[in-house]
Length: 473
Image 1 (spheres, helix red, strand yellow):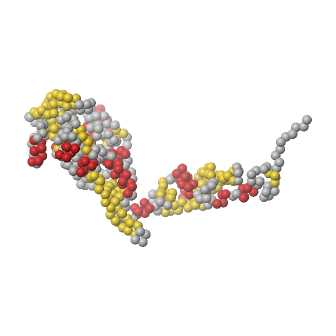
Image 2 (cartoon, helix red, strand yellow; image 1 turned 135 degrees about the horizontal axis):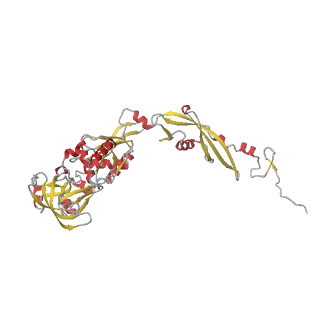
Image 3 (cartoon, one colour; image 1 turned 120 degrees about the vertical axis):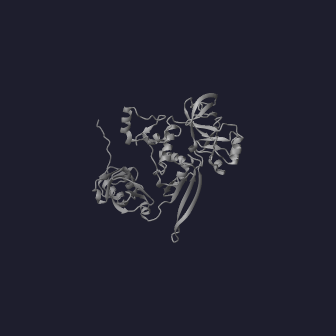
């Protein structure tokens, strides 16, 4: 019996007549490639704009991007510039070497296209990109002799000192919220100016600051120029931000409207912290209240006494009265002035958990202060000792020693500080208060690293109150 094998009958190509296996197009590969030469519609030479000033390539009519030579970003940009590949699939792309100064970028592209039913054609192309020198709008704006910002944010605090500004500055640095600012300037009268190239960047920055301080926002705009033929206008936007007049650890005599609004808890308060809300605490009963931006700026108030009026007292004895929670304990302290040790006074405080006999505390002494008649009448109606304890003080009372002491850490600054002494006081507060250090980045001071090693060998090293998390810059 003979074996029969199945064979496929060949057909002639409908174009040239060559015998081929049957396929949906009934054409040979040569005729099919010539009939469907899809690569001819793709431009072999494409212009690519490049800004010599900032080193960016133009990706769209309104945007410019940074991309190095033979980088994935540049390859992606080049592929997007290729026209005529709507129905064509790119399966591979790579750079071909060219001399860096030739202003030519060559890309080898392998493309595929499906024709007729299931026939897939594939071919390779070499596309040359000619680098054309151009100037991006940002560099053009910088080269124009005029103010280059479109929006400016002015941050101010009309208070005795700039401690709140210093703390906000560290929060801005920690979160890199200033990255979109083109220029930052510190004013002599206190405060910072942030300049931006567009209005949305300034608004995002203002929204960031609102989460860290109950600021008052006032906006305005000014017409800097106009083109009536093109119907275009050059508007400059200004955001005036004002921080509260109250700073941390300031003594507050609560206004009547806030005293009633907050449940009549206490007329005398201490500013505990500044964040999205002003947090006040009763120094005698540890009751806390929060004041938002709207409540404060409806009728803003000034502090009764600021942190610069704090005096140092030594604790002679301590008697615990009541434990409020894990953080605060009400106690009665017997204090005496650190300088004279003459008078003794009994005070009630909420800091019984952290204060002990022999410690030094910081307090406001209202006994010899002259107030206005309205304030004096309000204070006379309150039953309290006229010494109000605010915080625990450091054991070293020598301010000269602290000033000359070199710290093992340093802080970054957005702009040079005008008053270095005030900034040193702010750094002292960071060392003493761990809560104030939340969100603040401390960097190792490498300049005095060798000197500290010598001091440690001689036993002269200064201990820092609390453990500081210092990072390498």
